[in-house]
Length: 254
Image 1 (cartoon, rainbow, N blue to C red):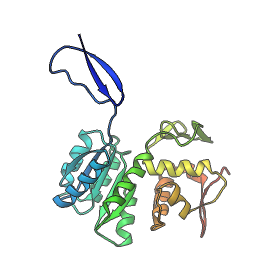
Image 2: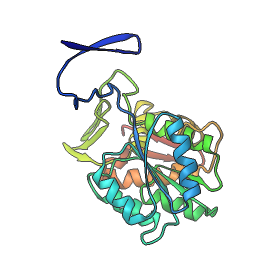
Image 3: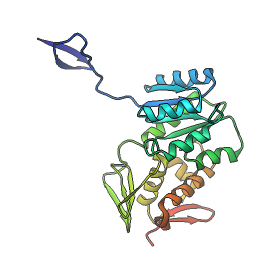
Image 4: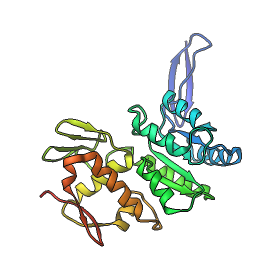
């Protein structure tokens, strides 16, 4: 005997058996961890992210966030800065220093409007930030953009090589002399975009559009902060990243 299940216009057949047998969904939803100590904020974010089709788990403080991030495979983290016990900046730092969570995209939520606070979050490894009070629609768009950076490669060419530097696009991996360099999704896309457009100067404004996918321009210091982190991680290979004063950046083969 077989059980017939009709799903989305096609049929699947499963052998009949134990009543406890479960039929699993064929598609995996991205799983997002939302960390905030304000229940109303958590409820608002959770409602909107679930409405966009994602699975959501929550944490109310830094310690709980660290435990859940290390216990459950995550696709993205929305992390408030002002948290009890361990604040969001320290959580971000610890997650980036842990190989199991180093590549998970992080969006920081901050009530602080000062530029230095936003830059500090980016310096510690956050991919993006949203300032409170925020628009739920804007947050959903930021999450969508960041998740896209971890998906399929942007072009057919699988690898880009310059000297000891190798950029493996399908695997989202960067290596120097065969040794893997841990980059965040945003750092990887920034490097890839520059390498694909090697020799051509890319303004900060264009990079914000093409890497961060912002419809409206925000603080261009975001680009500078990520470039600084990227150069630090690349070490000697950072010689390929050239600053064009007053304009932006370019990838050079010299």
